[in-house]
Length: 486
Image 1 (cartoon, rainbow, N blue to C red):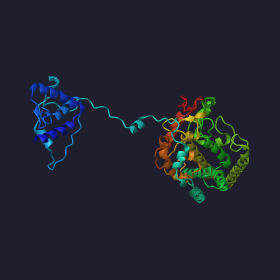
Image 2 (image 1 turned 45 degrees about the horizontal axis):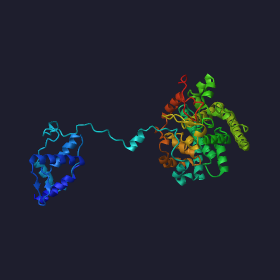
Image 3 (image 1 turned 60 degrees about the horizontal axis):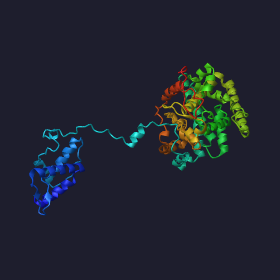
Image 4 (image 1 turned 30 degrees about the horizontal axis):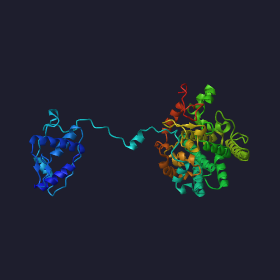
């Protein structure tokens, strides 16, 4: 290769050197000049030329980097037609002698292991991995607003179709009468247990539809909502308006220690003032799952009033007429059941209606409780300035009920329902999916259920053993455990 070619190759190689390598090469060049005294080679333009073979700078740089525990970036060579470059060929044939610049202890031998001699630095975590490891605090105010969630839900999810709503009522009523006729026809102890579970579940489904009437998500017609709601709820001994008003209070104050209405926590003072029998019954299964009728008559510990009394603390004066109407309807249904007991016999009536009613009560208490309790991590309850409608609603939980999801009208999609009770039940799943990206970690994905939600019994049992009361002080509080009950 000619001098001009050597000079060009040398310039390309020198451009690849790091700053540290250039400094070492400068020392090498000065030492070489002193030893050879005039051994400089002159180029055609009389400029001094480095007095060491081409390519030794790259080898030197590699040696320095290797000794420092680093690997040099790979050289990128232009590919030739033969697959090799002249530079690679020349480097493979020529291994220049390594000058002893830093002493014999640093002399490079051909047998040296060129692998990195220091431990590799720890892998740097990505931002996503750091976010995953950072502990999430559900009690911290969310970075989004209620309007952000609302904007993420498609507009058609807010549309109420009364014909579609009525179709669910017709379906459920037909199933209820069909199950009763079938059980009365066979009338044997193989069919009865199956009937009790199925009919109790259908009573619960009727309750959910009446619940939609109370929220106004059944239709935009208040009169239609009231008529259908009274028919459905009175048939299962629920005072429609009395319950509708108290349930509205529950939604407006969800997650508030004192102001919530349904399965809210007891303060430590109220809890410790309960007698031992009441404490044990409240947290010993199956008694808590049979509490709903008693709640209608006397509310929760620490609160007074009745869903049947128009003068109760639950209601304001202009709601008393509605409460009286619902109480009259409830009384009429109770009278009808008594008359049917004389006609069909009390035992037959108990089998056809009484036991399914208590199965329905258990469904109602189970679902209502687990939508606000039993998460693997403790969820906050609020007081004072820390409470807001959004923060309280985000403490609710979705649950998966397997085959029961469709039967009880997807009431398990509870978070979006609690925040926006005006959304019809048949749009709740789609609305929830649309809102998940906004909710982020504030939405807790429910555990997938078997065809029947037996897994919820374990969650219920664990919660009953752990979630007993909250502190009397503090605006963000968590359930505490009574060691005696645990």
